[in-house]
Image 1 (cartoon, rainbow, N blue to C red):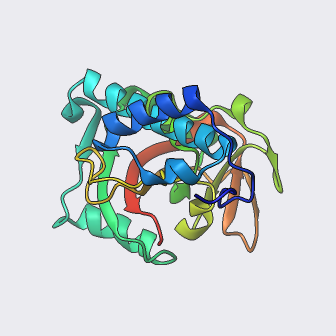
Image 2 (cartoon, rainbow, N blue to C red):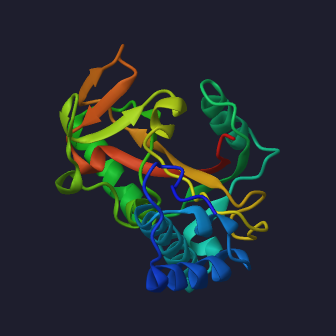
Length: 229
């Protein structure tokens, strides 16, 4: 057995952590990934966080019928083609599925914010984040208080190109059979495509936008796609 993890750290036995991860991985994938034997404590901890987050998201999605919270966008529709075309401008990853947010209350808040701003036009922009954040954003919207400062200051960041937002997403790096909740691959990423009022600071060739108002961005779609090999 190798003595160092792929990240370069030494491999140490962490029995309790491993048991927890084995349990979560089995619930999620039906088997224990072989990579646990060659992973350090930090990597195991990160993998445990990802699996627990994914399990929590699945539970959250099944507490209420899926049809009440999200609408699966059919592949043979103009809506699907529009989202896919925007995504494919900068990423070649295979899209597993696209879901539309049915949060009428949050969408109403967005529309009222647009009217108050006096800006009738919005733009569809991508937003990448950690897996654990997506369900909260889809339910409760964006929260400036949880944002850290970036190159354009404090705010919610959106991008014209999916490739930029992809760098802020994370994927489950566990080996196992296909999971029905995830679609066609056990290693996936999620990304939001949002209606955004362009009232914030633009940078990076005007491809990146920093929005200062929580309700000037509405999480309209969530895109599930295969992680690059």
